[in-house]
Image 1: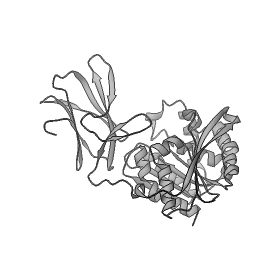
Image 2: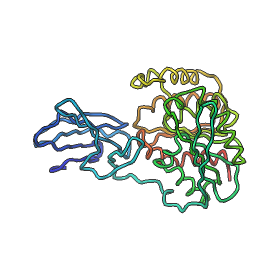
Image 3: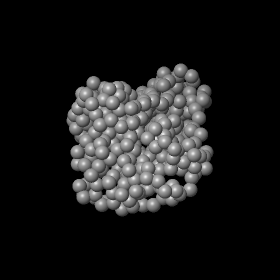
Image 4: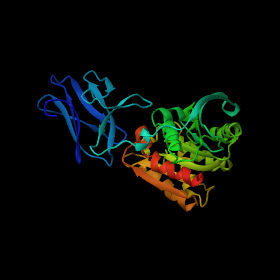
Length: 343
C-alpha cells in the first residue's frame, strides 16, 4: 500500500490507509462490528491505522469521514473493491488469505418451489407476507426463520436448504421466511409477539404444511425473540438454531443501554439465566468470535445446558455479519437438523 489507500491483512496486524493529500478531513475512523478505531494523519498525505487482527478470517467494515465543518459521512473503502451486502447497505470486506466460502454454495439445488402466503395476525394487527420454499416431495418438517427475507438474501438460507437437500445431506423440509415487521418492537422479548408467533403464526403454518413442531431459527434480535417465544410457549418447537443472540446483560452490554427495549430484554435474559430448569429442546448456538455478543452468548449456552437443553455452541471466525452467520450454517445447523429430523 506504499502509494495508495486501502486495507491489507498482514498476519497479526490489519493495516488501513486513506488518502487526503490536502488534509481536508478532520478525521477518519474504521467502523465494524468487530472494532472501531481512528486513523492517524501521517506524512505523505494519508490517514493510517495498524490494528491488532481480531479472531476472524474476514472483516466487514466501512469508513467514517469527519469533515472540518463538523459533518460526517460513512462510505465504503474506495480503494477496496470487495463488497458484502447487508440490511444497512454494502460494506467493504477484507479477507484473510486462507478464507474459503462454504462448499455447499456449489451444490445443485433440490427440486422445489417458492410461494408467498398472506397471513393475517390478529394479535399484531397486521398481515404478514410469508415466503415458503417446499421441496418436491411431501414432508411435514418445517424450519421457521426470523428476519426471513434477509436470512435468505444475505445469509443464503434458501440456497443452503435446497443444496443440502439436493445432495442428500439433509432430509427434505419446508423453509418458512418470516418478515421482521416492526422488528425492534417484535423481536425485543415482546410478550405480544411471542403469543402471536406461538398462538397464531406457527399453528397456521403447521396446518398449511401438514407439519409437526417446528425448528425455529434467528440471528441477533431474531434469535432472542425465538428463544423468548420457545420459553413462554414451548409446545410448538422441536428445536432452536440461534446465531449471535442479543441476550443483553448490564455487565457485558452497557453500550446497548440506550436501546428503547433494553430493560425488557435484560429482564428476560436475567430470568432465563437464573432458571433452574427450562422447556428443553435440542439447540445449536453460534456466535462470532470477534463480536460484542460473545460474552452474553457464552452465559446463555451455559445456562441452557444446565437446564437440560441438549445444546452445542460454536464461535465462528467472524463478527456480527450475515456472511458470518451463513458460513456457520454447516456444520452447525446441519447437525441440529439431522439430530431432530434423522433421515
